[in-house]
Each structure stands twice: as C-alpha cells, then as structure tokens.
Image (cartoon, rainbow, N blue to C red; front, side, top):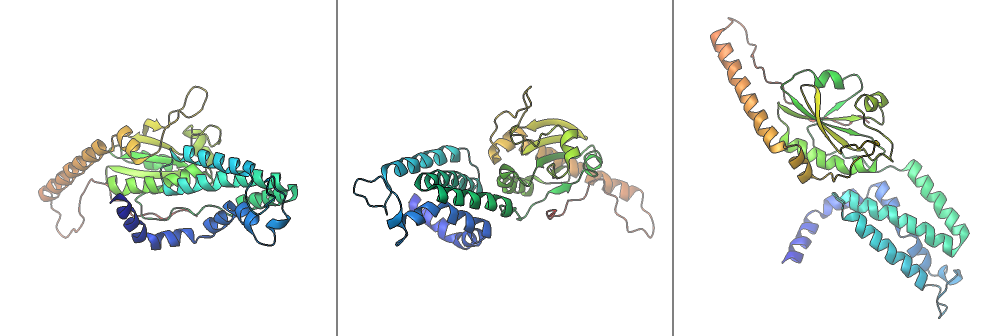
Amino acid sequence: MGIITGLCTFFYHLPQIYKWLLKPYYIASSLMTVAFLLVRKAPGLCEHLATEREDGNSCDFDWREVEILMFLSAIVMMKNRRAITMEQHIGNLFLFSKVANVILFFRLDIRLGILYLVLCLTFVMTCKPPLYMGPEYIKYFSDSTIDEELQRDSRVTWIVEFYANWSADCQSFAPVFADLSLKYNCAGLRFGKVDIGRYGEVSQRYRVSTSPLSKQLPSLVLFQGGKEMMRRPMVDSKGRAVSWTFNEENIIREFNLNELFQKSKKLNKGHGLKGEEQTSSQPEEGSNELHNDAPEQPIESKKDQ
C-alpha cells in the first residue's frame, strides 16, 4: 500500500519534477554525475581504456572502481540523513558524485582527470543553483532598512533569516522558511530576510559570520521590540555554530511559533476592537479614514536579484 501511495504521489508531481529537473543547473549536474559511467560504457571508447580486471574487459568496472562507488554511496547516505529538502538530497548526490568522478578519472587517465577537474571548476564559477521563487510572506531588508523596520513597532515580533545567495544551505532552507511564513505570518508576527553576503555591515552589526568555516549560515534570529531574544544556531566561545538541524519541526518548537502566533492574533484583535471604539466615540463628519492600530499585512515579496 505504501509503494502504491508513493507511486501515485510521484506521478501526481511528475510535471513539477520535470519542470524542476529541466533547468540548466540540474541538467549539467546530472551529466557530470554520470560522466565516468558514460565514458566507461561508451562503445568505441571504452575498448581503449585501462583496466585492472582479470578478464581484460575494459568496458566494465574493475574491483577498485566498485569500491570507490560503494564508498560514495555510503557517504551520500550518511549526509542525506540530515538533509531536509529534496534540493539538499540532490545537492549531496551531485557534490560527492563529482568528487568520486575526479578520483576515478585521475586513476583511469591523468589527462581525463585534469579535463574533468577543469570542467568542474568552470561549472562552479558559471552555473549557480536556481533560487527559490515560490510563494512567501517575507520582507527583504537592506543595510539601511533593517534597523528601522525592526524598531518601528514594539508590538511586532520579527523572525529574521541572515543568509547568503552563494550558500547551498541557505538555498536549501529557502522553501522551508517560505512555508513557515505562509503558515504563521500575521500583523504581530512577521518574517524577514537579509543577504549578509551582499551587506557586510549587517553581518558585523548582528554578529553573524559569513565564513564557511563558522557554519553560521543560515542564522535565524528572533527580535521583539527591536531587541534580539534568541538565535539558532547558537555560537560557542570560538565563534563556531553549535550543530542544529534547520527543519520545520525544530524551528516551530525552538521559537514557540504556535504560541507566538496565538498571542499575535489576540493582540491584533484587541487593537482592532480598540480602534473601532475610538472611531465610534469620536466620529468625524466627512471623514472616510479608518483608525486601526494594527499594522498592515505584508504583501508577497519578490527576490532582490
């Protein structure tokens, strides 16, 4: 029954999967992932390759290549245990497959290894993973707007993600954060993002390191009244992030999103009733202005390309 359900789900989302996989980044990555397999099995080419097989069949894997591929499978499985989204699973597969291909090509022929390594470097510099462009209720800050917006209204709680576009972890986390904004956004609880890879002053001001070694990207910070209340991941005395899994369940639990959301809704209703009482007790003739203390709902934002 579970297999049938899985197949039905796969076929239901098949058009979206095709649309996702047909992007240049995924097409090129897929070809580079299976590059060694194609070379080893290509008729007319594999006959001229070196092999350590006892039967001399150069069009099939030898025992050392099988060991490398098995080790690759084990590494991908271990890394994918902490993966959250499909993009992270696919990203881990692409990354470690390319590393294995480099080793296999250098072992087969140093010229092929150098050629494949150059292709990998060219790919990294010219082809970037596609950014998430789905629905969200997130306000994007710049270095000149973040402080003003966080301190504008002390009743509003902000959850701000500090990210960088070059970070694969940030790109994988983008759909999760967008989904949380759709579920929990209200006038008293808002979601924001700031690209500290672009605005370096913001990273220093809020003490979020952009160094890949610190592993602080992405960082989620909860602000109330313009003041930082908590952040994840936490940072130790050496400036390194304490290991923390960025999935939806952990964020909801650690940041008490359900409780914050309920309090924010009650706060909004209270201010809405207060505004109605003020309007009814002090009517102004010929005035169409509605007095409401609750802040406006943020509209769905677009990414700053």
